[in-house]
Image (cartoon, rainbow, N blue to C red; front, side, top):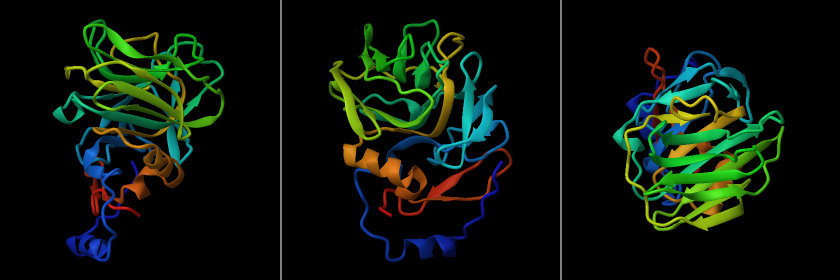
Length: 264
């Protein structure tokens, strides 16, 4: 696990002096979970949002990422499991964003991130590739499956900055590298559920796991805008949100946001 330098109160105060006004659109306080996968080793994926939504790594391997290290998922048994928590129950708007590398061998559903039970008909939010691995899909359960299906074309063997945004009212939009590739009217928000959050797959399912790599995965409780997506893609989550990492305590890495929501 990467060791983080402890920041004292004096250092934190110094970092705050002269900081520019906060950007209300990109705000660390709206982050439900941020998993940079920068540890490079170990079996825990640390959450830098401050919500302590750390994930247990199951069968995924550390590898070189788009930004520092990433996790490699084998498409059969690998995933990151994050326990259910109130901070992950999003009953209005949400944004899922990540650097995604889909292997050419991925020809099935490949989940990026989702909070969905198996086999129960329940999903608070989810983002994945389509059944044959050629399109992008984002959905939830509210009296039936509501979502956008088969949007765009999945480019294989290359890093893409993929984002799914639900506006909290009716519309879900999928972005590739900051550009819209599809949107759909899917109605009112879903109710919160009790499922774990899974990265690279979903709960207890062996047939819908990603064959590829993930890096800089984040979940927000708001619908971020296109300009914000581009900033996160070009600048990186940690710098855009002003996250200052601190020393890991045991297996639990934690982080502070010095000026939560502040611009660089």
